[in-house]
Length: 156
Image (cartoon, rainbow, N blue to C red; front, side):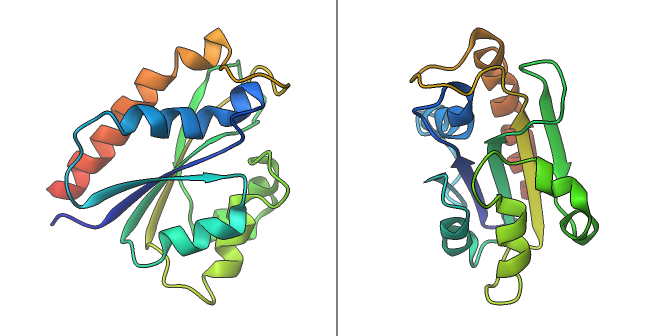
């Protein structure tokens, strides 16, 4: 099958756990991934995400998400039309324009992946710092495991 897969880390490296997605992307760059998998760092520009995702069949988006759980809690879910249409997605991203709204807008103008998976982590701190908190740092290996599992699933 070998779908073209984009793995995209979003976030701000200058703000503790807000940089979670980018930290994971930096770890993935050290992994040997299949040729059909590309990794990208998109910072906090939700609209730039659309250009990156265009033409891929599957996307995995990594971000800090506030859902009220314990810091370091890992969330994984498919982003589908129902979630894009209800109010739930408004609370997920910590950026000016969250990526779910950007994707909803982009579906009309871009050829976006039919499957979009969000893997997020509950942040503990969003303040000036270049480092993840210990609770969020502990979740990085779990998230990488989830990503590798998704890649394997697409290869079957």
